[in-house]
Length: 356
Image 1 (cartoon, rainbow, N blue to C red):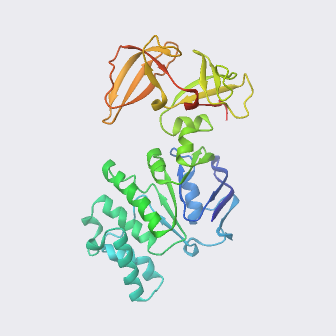
Image 2 (image 1 turned 45 degrees about the vertical axis):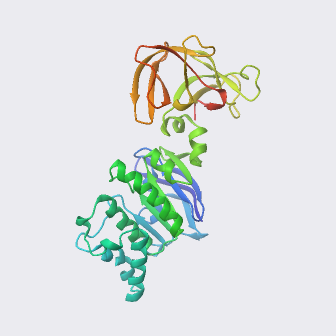
Image 3 (image 1 turned 90 degrees about the vertical axis):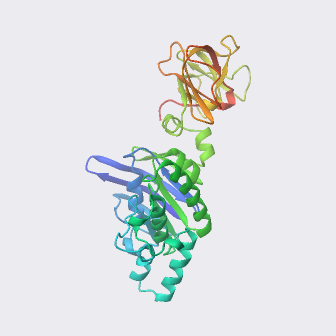
């Protein structure tokens, strides 16, 4: 539905976007994820019509989007600040875009009522934004965006102004609404959990380039670059070189680590033996065992942090500057200072090229 091909945007000496190419399908919930300043909002503004790229093309259903002014594009943009009119009621805020199009009054009324019911704000139609909670204001902004029935809805950090509890509720609400109204959503966020919980697919940005596009599970379990492995969720990273099969198993490989010798992982793709590489293993894939257990790396517990349903245990290994993070269900059964071992299965660790 939306094709972005080789889009580049420079601001003086700074390259905000460097030959970015993406394809977004009809009805998809697509996330642009990355740290501040990586170019994701610039790309959103180009699609919306507020920025013009220095090179590349953007098409929607095969039509050149860049040739159309912002007000002629079948796109709605929901701003991070919501940008509601404080002197208007909820119903008037939602109706504003339709009234500007000079649609019949009865049609405007009907569409506003329908969308307010969809977002659960029918009872608040006569209130003003100042009389609403943060979550309710977010719903008004969303209602105002979808009432015009755009082909594409762009959301710029839509949940950043909400507290953690409301944000979690609104993530579910956004996903429900997207399925209900059938509009393609493209959301910009720096929050990994938000992107993972909302999106059908995620594009990870870094320094103006797309590092990986994948579904949330694949992105989390099989990162293809050190940046993605480090940025998306917590990861334990071990540098080294590519070795041969682990214990004679052709389905696995080893990383000859700089400090700990051979470490098991999944076979690297198109990496020659001896090439510099990085092994990444998630905290929940690391097993905490007795110090003398076979195949384990020996260390001592540095800290135990309890987060309700899960505990994070930091294990200090001689020769490693950063502790290994282990995630276990419930309360941790070890104390700081305890001597332990850590190990993992080869299938749960990913070996990738060290340099991108």
